[in-house]
Image (cartoon, rainbow, N blue to C red; front, side, top):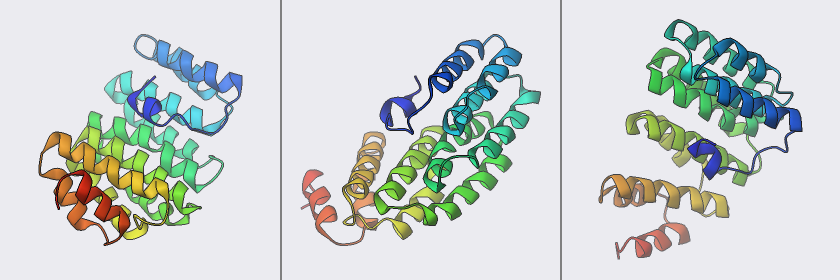
Length: 205
């Protein structure tokens, strides 16, 4: 299970075939790209199909990576709603950034951030952007900046508990990398109870 899957286990309820296909694709990806692709494409549920394709792209020969990532991006459009499309693209985007396919990553990230405004309810919007930010930041903090700017635009920290947790998560991750990182996150937040809570939590008052 990937770090993203460990942190965000609450995904659409899968069919057994999707779980089996994703697991098999992950097992085969390091040694047999063709069979791994076959297993990934056999996942009935788009969410798991995209994750499986991303795991194949992670291990494929370089001349195949981009075409697999493009396939994953197309399949993400088949997710059950805007939340699914935005959130699940974290997996292929993470691979793209790590593998250096920056044109693909930049284009698809821009699409995701535009679509994020259509994710409902607000709690789901915050959750999708948290998944996306985590994947981008893990690849390189600079890649997460467009997501952070969109979070500030769309996610008022006091509008849902998931939004509050989103800002907490980003502050904790930034603080772990740089002791001043949490303060920078909190300064950028809109005033309110969540900002005050985080100021107390990180000793800024």
